[in-house]
Amino acid sequence: MYAAGVNGRTAAIAGASGLVGGHCLRAALESYERVVALVRREMTIEHPRLEQRIIDFEGLKFAIPCDDAFCALGTTIRAAGSREKFRTVDCAYVRSFADACRAGGARQLAVVSSVGANALSSNFYLQVKGGAEEALGQFGFEALHIFRPSFLTGKRKERRLGEMIAIPLARPVQVVLIGRLRKYRPISAATVGRAMVAAALRGEAGTHIYHYDEMRALSASLLAQQ
Image 1 (tube, rainbow, N blue to C red):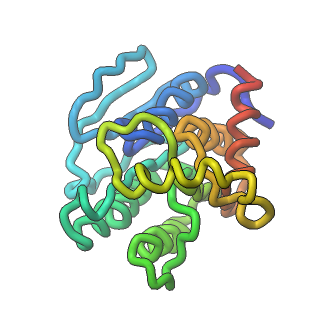
Image 2: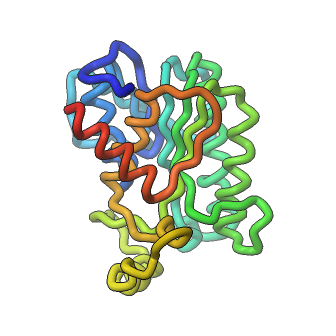
Image 3: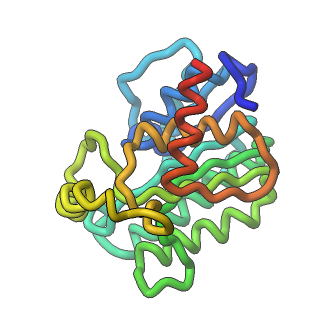
């Protein structure tokens, strides 16, 4: 079952300055004795249990001691500048972080992917996400938690054209997104971030994939413990 309060473990987070990562960070600070955030530039948030480590993910070759790892790294092709740079962030950096945390003793990894992720997809974005998922399964974590949200809602630092168009269109049709289509419903970044921490606190071994309903249930369970 879920732990209530600080659990004496250390969490490492990559992507803590992003939309989902920021919510994951706040949830982790409520549950972990120590939280190490790997960032490219210092964040304004301060907390007695938070340690910020400014790093270059290109040179992430050292072990990161932690019990649980959370990865919310991600960008867009437009922001990255090219498909190859996008692949670097969403796959190579994710793998480097996982490798560093596993070397540091991490037993669990929770990672944000995407609904429809598939290494064999004809869609480049979903292909990269699926490839990253497959790669993470080779690191030997006791538990691998893969979160596959559809469109994310919440305040972003940058405006994503695709989501600006799709989210307003998707909200009115949520009533018809039922059954197998429920996983395509927009979901708040706060829900996903809390769900990541909830899954790690539950600590079930094996590989687990979470969609809309599972993420909402996990998030609600964590809120009930606070």
